Image (cartoon, rainbow, N blue to C red; front, top):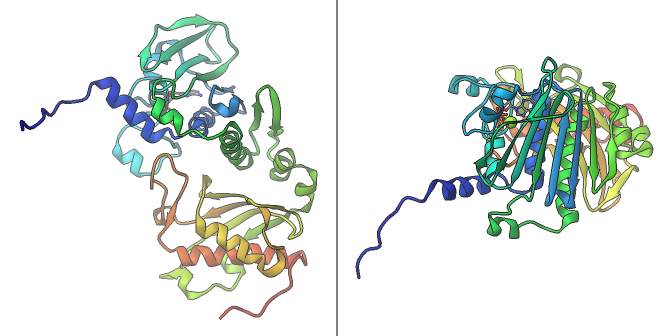
Length: 357
Ligand code: ADP
Ligand code: MG
């Protein structure tokens, strides 16, 4: 038998495969768009989705906007206003996402429209991308700021589309992401709408408890106690230290009363160096701190900001994942546990236990 010929895939196919690798579901798109809005200095970010985001996603902000003559660049491959070279990237600049890839990538697997008006522009402009085909820039009436619309995600990658779950599941993921950013940015008014109905809207008044109230409701907000912990203020185990340097510099946030819980899933929003992340170690540390106070299969609410030395956390495990890894996981774990435990003890919500051996 003749060996088959090896051929290079065409650009469109390459583009779609790559896009499917990083854009997992509507929630991943929402995450990127919110990050762009926050990077643009927005004070309001309004997210609205249709059918869990599978049919439509719209993120509107009042940020710095994109000048008409830069709209094409904004949706182009490897185009960013945020980093210039690999050194910027490694220095851990404040911006996140796909490093100049988000709009390009989303445009490859959906019908994307970016409409924008910088504050000093007399009128707005828009650009549309359909399955990677970039249209012409056209004038458009719009308020100051940027609106990004994504319709029919994965319409041209049916295999990817098949992996989407039920609308309610996809919306749960979207809700988790928007909630995560809303709680991390209490000074920004963040709202979420699903099929025309408001899920929540924060005030943007800078107060974390007020943001919690908007997102989780009054009962939860009122039951939460403040966490503010630094290593000097508590006894720390030696494993948490390296050359005298603590593994965690500070832990702040809010945690709920052990009886203010929900079943089946947890409501833990955790941030490492102000970045929204998930980490099994953080989750376990929080649950551990409640000790035996939680009823079986009941989970507390927590919003926790953990500050660690930047060079000891790896946030780039995978672009579509929120997971992080810590160099000194045991140290982080015990610090977070101490922090939550101290807050609960202070408020008489748990009884002190014998020090762990
Ligand atoms: P990155 O965010 O990594 O730069 P993106 O593809 O997400 O890459 O965005 C490309 C560029 O488009 C950004 O660098 C920014 O200049 C511009 N941009 C995207 N979204 C917005 C927004 N909401 N407001 C202002 N500028 C934006
Ligand atoms: Mg981006």
